[in-house]
Amino acid sequence: MQKIRAVRIRLPGGTEVLELVERELREPGPGEILVRVRGAGLNRADVVQRLGRYPAPPGAPADIPGLEYAGEVERVGEGVERWRPGDRVMGVVGGGAMASHLLVHEREAIPVPEGLSFEEAAAIPEAFVTAWDALRQAELRMGERVLIHAVASGVGTAALQLVRAAGATPIGTSRSREKIDRCGRLGLADAVVVTDGRFADAVGRVDVILDTVGAAYVAENAKALALRGRWVLIGLLGGATAEVPLGVLLSKRARLIGTVLRARPLEEKAAIAQAFAHEVVPLFAAGKLRAVVDDVLPLDRVAEAHERMERNELVGKLVLVP
Image (tube, rainbow, N blue to C red; front, side):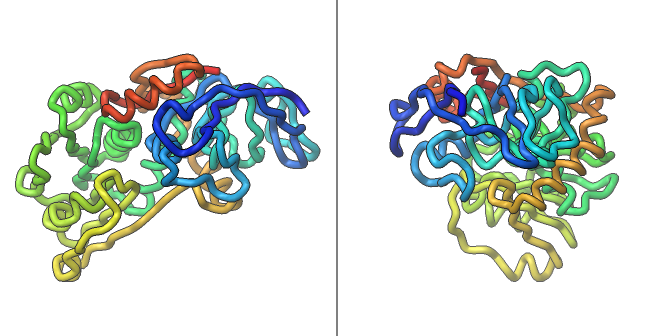
């Protein structure tokens, strides 16, 4: 056992329930690696977990948030073959990344792209793996038009770059003109500032929708879908319950796909991590993709980080450094 520093959610509530504590962490078991965390990306899921509405999945710490990390391997467990102490790794976890150390299965870890800092790497896993996996499920094809809601978010800024890299056209929505302008530097082709919940007429027909909003945009999403369009639901910021115009989806022969990373079983997460390492990580090293870091804060300012996310001030990711 060794002592680690970690963010603890004392009980559901506001940012005052977040505190830094010392915990004991066991030694890595068979197939596991102990990672010295050098940066942890903040996600909307961390905020929702703090509020008591998104519990950690089985096997993840119930009161230590954090879904993505970057750091270096400190020790390895029995049978580990992929990594050795000193290797730079990053990845997505069910929880526990807001800490100085973290145990992960060796097959879930992804190599940090060459030339990137730990802070940049910490902004990659959750956003880029989520966006890449969603586009893969949508079977994105070259030349298609992709509507990305909350385009200035971590997932949004990742998605627009991946869409560009695939030879398709990214179109975004946001409630802020300033955020859209900043996303233009990442290759955003067109965008709509949504002030009244309507956007379909402005964006025209799109082949794929990456939806982080949910209920509030259901009717407009259905209207915007092209024939044989694919609508991938990856978030519920605008609510979880809505009337779905099934007739519209039926007539357009559209597909509605729901997806989530956090609760998937180990084998599925490992397969995704390895495919991402093979297909996407080289694009960072080649300069075709980049991490979008809004700011870097020390771990003891985690409450401030949550407040900034709740105020929707960010473009890209906030990274916390233990």
